[in-house]
Image (tube, helix red, strand yellow):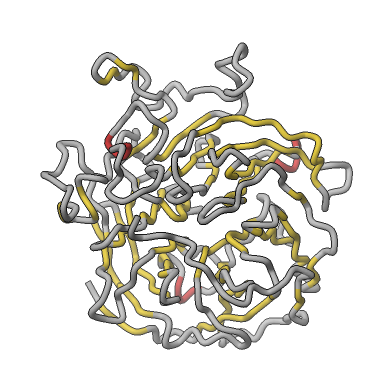
Length: 410
C-alpha cells in the first residue's frame, strides 16, 4: 500500500453554481450532452447543457409530496438502461409521511421535460427517524435496480435493523423494474429477481425480505458501479469510530453481510458491538475520525474513474462530507492499493469544495464533484486545456450556511 499525495496534473473546474442543496448528478446512457442535477429540498431535477454550460430555466422534473427534514428529501436518480427507447427513470425520495419511496416517471414529448403525471410508486420503505435514509439508486450490468437503504436512524441501530433480514432497512436491495410479482398490491410494483439470495430464507419463522441483496449497512451514502468491470462499491457512514468502503465483485451472488451494528468498519462497534458474524464481509478500507489528512467523520462514496484522463483511470475517488477532503484508492476484491490524498492539489478554478455531498458521472465517464453549497465541479487535466463554456448560475438560491447532511452520531 502506498500513502501518497497527488502528483498528477488534475484540477477541478466549476461548471455551474447556485443550486439549492444539490445531492447528485448523472446522465442517461448515451446522452453526452446533458448532466442532470438533483436538489434535495426543492425536489427539482435540473439540466446542465454541457456544450454551453447553460442551466435550463425549467426543471426536468419537480418531485412533489416530499419531506425534507434533516436527511430527507430527493435523494437519488437512475435512468433505465433502455431510457432512449422507453423514457423511464426512477427517483429515490422521502415522502410526506417520512417514509422512503422509489418512484417511476417517464419523459414527455419534450426531451428536456418529464411527464409529472406519469408518477408510479414502486416500493415504500417505512422509516421511524429522519436520518440514515441511504437513498442512492442505480442499475447494475444485470439490468436490475439496486437501492441503498439505511438502518432507519438513531444511535446504535436501536431496532437492530442492520442484522435483520425481515426488514428492508440497513440493506442493499435489488429489484426488477420490468415486471410485477404483486399485481394485486398497488404498493409493490416490481419483480423479485430469481437469483436474489434470500428468497427462500426464513428467520425465526418469518420469511426474509426477498428484495435484499446484501445487508449489515448503517447509512450507505453513495454507492456506484464500475462501468468497466461491473463491481459495486458502497461507502457506509460510521457512527463514532470508522468510516468504510465496501467492495462487491461483479461475480458476487449477493448475500454479503457488512457487519453493522455488530461491526463498525473492521472493529466491534464501541458499546454495542460483538464478534464478527460468520458471513461478515470486511470493508476494503476504513478511516478514523482524526489524526491525519486521511481522517474524517462522514464518508461520501464516489466512482472508479473511467473517463478520458488516463493518469487516473482505475482510481476510486471518495470524500468526507464534514471536512471536504478528497482521496482515491485502487480497489480490489481483497483490499486496496495506492491510497492518495488529493485535496492539496485539487484547488478549484472558482469557488470552494467544502461539503462533498456526492460525486457523479456523465455518459462518457467524466467525473464530477457535487458540493452541498451549490457548486458542481468537473475533473479535468491541466495537460489538455478544455474548450470550456462560461460558468452558469442556477436560478435557485445559494445556501448561505450548510446544515449537517449526514448525522454520524445518531
